[in-house]
Amino acid sequence: MNFNRRNFIRSASVLAALTLSEFEALAARQKLSGGGKTIAEDDEAYWSNVRQLFPLTKDMIYLNNGTFGPSPYPVIEAMRNSQMDADQYGNYGAYDATPPKIAKFVGADHDEIALTHNVTDGINLACWGVPMKKGDEVIVTTHEHVGNMMPWMNRQKVHGIVVKKYTPASTAAETLNRINALINKNTRAIATPHIPCTQGQVLPVKEICTLARDKGLFSLIDGAHGSGMMPLDLHDMGCDTYASCCHKWMLGPKGTGYLYVRKDFQDTCQAFYMGGGTDDGKWDLMTDPITMGGYAPSAHRYFGGTQANGLYAGVNAAIDFIETIGIENIYRRVKSLGKYTQDRLLEVSKVELLTPTEERSRCAVNGFRIKGVDYHKFFDMCMEHKIRIRAVPENGLDCLRVSTHIYNNKDEVDKMVELIKKAV
Image (tube, rainbow, N blue to C red; front, side, top):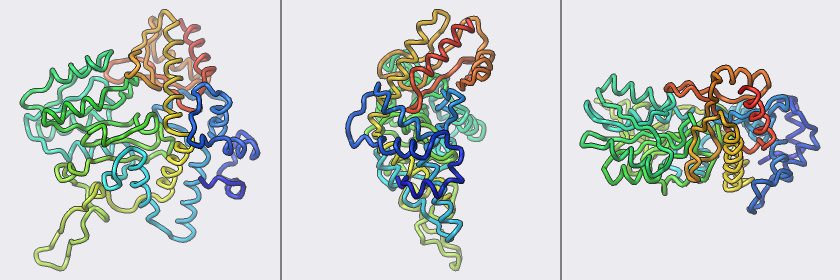
């Protein structure tokens, strides 16, 4: 991860905002590696060392990883080094190493990964790429983020497709039943979040993709909250596309993401945004008529042109950081914190928990309302007490969301719950 003493001192200008000493940071880094072993989700000494490697201010409790995840120092360092390399020596193309690295991380092949700037980029590529005509239907949820809603609404406006919706149920089985009930002869696609941004419910995406495949439908997953929160195997999931970002649970640079497009789906999902790298190299301007050639024989057909060396070096470092700890260890830790958050919220009689308590349907994000307390007012109250959560006005839910990652602990959750008690 290239986080040795020499690099640390050389980058003092970037890391000047450290809230700990050089010695403490290096000591934490040395203790970080799990060495492939299981790390207990309640090993607070270990997770405290992990927390030391984030520049998060100690003056605020950050419970909003679902918006974006703060990057740890090794990621910041990698971004700086790569950017300096580009600006000092004019080197470019370092991002070529990123698609294979992402592919290995999420259970895909290197030629199935397109680089994007965020989830919305990937969703738009998938939405506009699937063949649909007037009257064809796509199924979405009532918990959509604008990034997965507006692309489909725009296709409805431009091409006359029909958007149908379902509300996720409190169990995975009933959620699947609700989707199945909407499928008819006009249905062409299921475009659903893996984990809705609103209340963090983990939807049964593997079963949804199996249902889609059995019915001859496209399965297009909004994976904003999957990568980095839990282990992924996109081949096993069986989706046609999976759009995600690297700046939430992966803790990477802001403005980075990827789109997975299943290899044998790439000739179905039309590419529209063309440029350097998107073709097979056979275009010829000097022929008459001009010869276009074909598309790149990979997901590179969906992204072209120069990419940011520094940002994607940061993505590579973020994956290294996660793998040093172990994604299974991270999953257990964040799921444990999510369960602890649920338990504490349910202790307050006036709290309405919106996230299912079913084991498979919950993880690190919880949505709730406080009866008799306006959600905007409680959000403002949290900010006054230096606790950052998220207000959720989407689709009239008017609720609150807490999302905890590996730098959080139970004490921080407790402080938010005590504030809820004060509010009621």
